Structure formats: C-alpha cells, structure tokens
Amino acid sequence: MTVVKTQLPRFLNFAKSPNLSQKLMVVGLVITILFIFLALFAPVFQAWGWLQDPTDFLSNPIHSPPSAKHWFGTSRLGYDVFSRTIFGIQAALQVVLLATVLSMIVGVPLGMVSGYVGGKLDKTLLFLMDSIYTLPGLLLSVTLAFVVGRGILNAAIAISIAYIPQYYRVVRNHTVSVKTEVYIEAAQAIGANTWQVLSRYLFFNVIQSVPVLFTLNAADAILVLGGLGFLGLGLPEEVPEWGRDLKQALEALPTGIWWTTLFPGLSLTLMVVGLSLLGEGLNEFVNPRLRKENGIRK
Figure 1: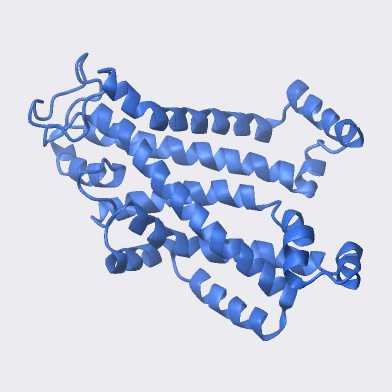
Figure 2: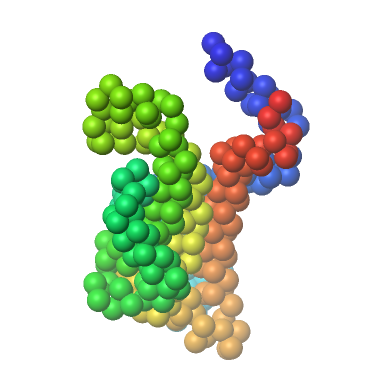
C-alpha cells in the first residue's frame, strides 16, 4: 500500500503535466514500438501480398521512382526499396538485441563480482575494461568483424565487445557503494556466501541504470551495424541491410536517383532517434537527481 501512495503521484504528475523530457520519451516510445511492430509483422505482410520479397529483383524495373506499385521505388539492381527498408528493421533489431544482451550478460556479472570482491581481481578487470573502453567502438567492431566473419550472430559479437565495459563500470560502481550497506553486512553476518549476497541482495539494487544503458547502446549499435554494412562487413548479402543498401545507393545519387538513399537512411535515423529519446527519458526516472530537478519527486 505504501508503494502505491509513493508511486501514484509521480504517475499522475506525468499524466497531467509532463515536462519536455517526458514528452520526448513518449515520442521515442511510439517510434520504437512502431519499428518493433513492423519488424514482427513484416513476414505476415509479405504473406498477404502487401510486401514484395526483399530478395526478388528480376521481376522489377531498375531505378523506378516511387509509384503506386513501388512505394519507395526500386534500386539499381531492381530491389523493391520499400520491402528492403521494412525487412531491414527486422535484421537491425535482431543484431542489436543480440549485441546488447550479450554485452549485458558479460558486463553485469563481471561488474558485480569485481566491485564486491575487490582486490587484485578488481584491479585486473578495471585495467582490462578501461583498455577496451579507450578503443573507438566502430574501429573495434570493424576489427572483430574481420576476424569472426559476416552473419547475424557474428555481427552481434563484433558489436557487443565495445559495450561490455560500459555495463561493467556502471554495475561495479553501484556495487562498491552498496556493498557497505547494513543489509549486506547483516546477510554476511548470518552466513550468506558470495553467490547468495550477489544474487539475493545486490543484483536488484545495482541494475537500476541497466535499462537506460540498454536502450542507449541499442541506438548506438544500429549506427555501428550500418557502418559495418556500408563497409561490406555486416550481414550476408541475402539479408536486407540498411548499411549495404546505402552504399549501393550512393553510386546512383549523383545521377538524381534520390529515393534509394533517402528511405533507408531515414529509417536508420528515426530508429536511432526513437531509442535515444526513450533512453534519455528512462534516465530521468532512474536518476533521482534528475527527477528532483524536473519536479517529479514530491
């Protein structure tokens, strides 16, 4: 009952007089949900005949401008740009979700163990993570993509390495500040081992910022995936991908063929903006200082 009384005024305040950050978060949430909807139902739309096969190009004219038959026109190879753009959402979400989940699965436990145990293990992991963090994310992903090759899982692995230090540093810092709390000392006093303390008492108290970091990393991962595709290091050629489509479209852009560049680039931009706005809005709710500054906390 106490939880309802403390949380309900915040929700009512948000519903009655949302500030600019909250309004932008709603915009980001709507954009993100729209892209997820299109990604999930793209195969259904294709089965209903609303979308062409994104790999079919023999039956289409080359460089046809947007029309009733081809809403976004066709590319220089005859691909339907509309279907390639929609199915590109599906490929982007698959890689981004895999990459961010992999980095979270590795970074969060390492951060908890490092912050709780301390000592030489903490210093070693800090040095390793700081070394990775200093490398540019795109450069690191490009290097790893050369090693692991092309593919959805391989691209996710190449992208995820750059985000592990971020989860590690956030969770480690929270763990260091929380492990001295009274309830942790009480758990240790009654005989709880390290695993019990980490899983039962620390985990849910040190992951408040992880959802925020997840959405912001997802937005950045889309840009990295686009860069890998532009360089020819992303997904296999049979998989629709915005980065590779943009690379092919740039060759025809000087001749006035604008639609093959506009729509994939606009989709990539909107998806990044939506996830970024959602992450920034979540950060306001997670961060008590920001909530107080914006008048959410009573």
